[in-house]
Image 1 (cartoon, rainbow over the protein chains, first blue to last red):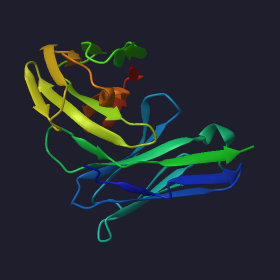
Image 2: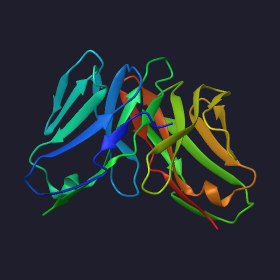
Image 3: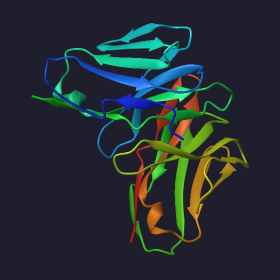
Length: 112
Length: 110
């Protein structure tokens, strides 16, 4: 079952602009993670935010988490053509099996 | 170093044929391992996960099975493939700070 739902499904921007992707989920979580997938490749872990955190930064990435609204956002600042990829949020509901439930993803296209 | 290997990269199989996809992890012991399937343009669906040798949890009843014959080896199998088994299969190694994914297998059942 899909826990996270990303919004929008697709986003097209110009190089240098900021890209914002949103994720909503349904049940309580231990942490929320964002992954990137280039076409036809495996996913790459970008950032993890724990349920007791509200904001986290990593380079040009900024993630926010609002557990009261069960939502998260991923902001990519000063986007580059190389940022073109699909971005997925994934939720970890806790437990020692570290099982993640992924959303359907947002396809980001950054035009040069 | 810690790495995950998945093969083959692509596979075209006829309906009714068997399937075996292999995933191995290096540089760690007793990893949590997962098989996901990704349909075209869709998210990832968890198929199986394993927290140790011989321990398999199935998330979705279907035409597939999984086995973990060795600590760092995770195998996805089918006795008879269906057209609906086509997709992109991903193996992942899970840790508290996130997953490391293999490069994936593109399976086309014809």
